Image (cartoon, rainbow, N blue to C red; front, top):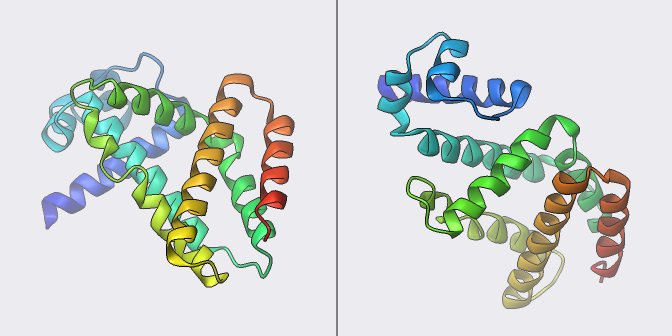
Length: 182
């Protein structure tokens, strides 16, 4: 258990560092030095730079799912808007870029990144489908709506990291939420 706690604390520090400084061409040695640890410790816990980055994305996504679960709103569209505001926080932009970079590498089968694909859709579809079922949608329709919402959100986030057009992607998300408000 102590080893897992040490890994979790180290991962938390990595996430914070990358949120502040981005990933760029950062090597494991540079990252380790910035964190006050050794690159061997990072390799011990995460296997490789790619393995570490996959874990960073998983932590950020888990934090985002926890945020979604914590939001309360009677209106489904308002809940979606509150979550979208959180996702588009400029402080998360580096994490969003990292997500899409690794997602593309994993989809191409790049070694060390393919683990990212495990649950990358279902980890979001299930909690969002539960919200849809609570709104009265039958289970299969709830899953389809959840998957559509995930696809739209990821597409608009990709648009955001490519263009920095926060106003444009937010307008598109607002329209999508209005269209889904049945």
